[in-house]
Image 1 (cartoon, protein in one colour):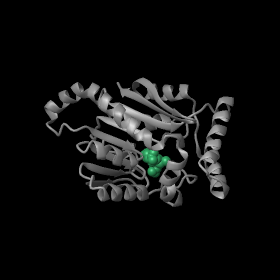
Image 2 (cartoon, helix red, strand yellow):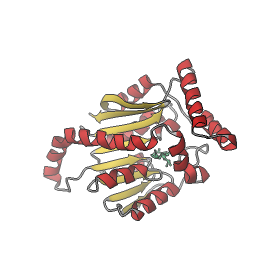
Image 3 (cartoon, protein in one colour):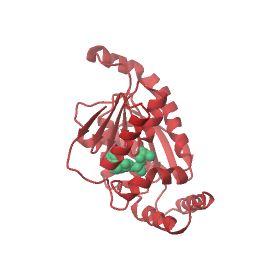
Image 4 (cartoon, helix red, strand yellow):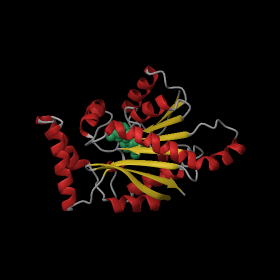
Amino acid sequence: MTEQRSGPERSALTPTFDFDGDYGAGYETLARALIPGYLDTFEMALAMLDVNLDASAPTRAGELASAVTDSAPRVMIVGAGTGIEMVTFKSKRPDWQCTGVDPAAQMIDIARARLMEAGIDDGTSFHHGTVADLPEDEVFDAATSFNVMHFIPDDGAKASFLRSIADRLQPGAPFILFDLFGEPGSSALERDYAAWRAYWTVRGFEGPPRDAFRKKIDNGIQWVGEPRVHELLAGAGFVDVRMFYRGLVYGAWVATRV
Ligand SMILES: C[S@@+](CC[C@H](N)C(=O)[O-])C[C@H]1O[C@@H](n2cnc3c(N)ncnc32)[C@H](O)[C@@H]1O
């Protein structure tokens, strides 16, 4: 397993969600409790990648004929976090080459330790930083981004984020996006967000931790509606965008790099 560090040491995106601090350390426990379908979505993503990597295999074969490298798919996991995507993928598809990208050193440390402990770290690597910092010649056959873009403002930054992912993908490569979504200020989002809070109650999430989490969501999430998700993906060079999962205010889409 190799690790590549680049750029200045820095914490992840916002001070509201401090992935190099306490929030990052407790993140996965919270995610498992509060994100509807959290664990299932990684297995659904794996199934989607299986099918869509098969569809893009001829392109990959053409490229490999000249590049002479391992034919195992190279998968970029944007926002590797505590490593749940990498653990899910590598336990079922040990041949995949998985590169986790994350600007929070703490999260990379957790993910790396977990993969090593499970004995599935062979063929994994980490990039400490953002996708834009990756060397230009590093290309992938597929990518995922779970729970990252909803922290990024829609002031050109979401568009750049998706563009930097598209720039690192082979033509025909599948990309999976999983994010909070909803049209800001709409009554639909108001009701769906209320339903998500009711889900917190169902899951027994109460008291000061709930109040603190609500404050973070209210201050730190950069909501966009589904039409805008499609527009952003199309603008970044993705086609054939389909939602394959929705859980309250969370959505998952699969798209293909042109
Ligand atoms: C909410 S966690 C999600 C972790 C994992 N993908 C999951 O769904 O459990 C978000 C992760 O994205 C990382 N992150 C924040 N900004 C990023 C960016 N611009 N590029 C890549 N990762 C980023 C954070 O450091 C954090 O580890």
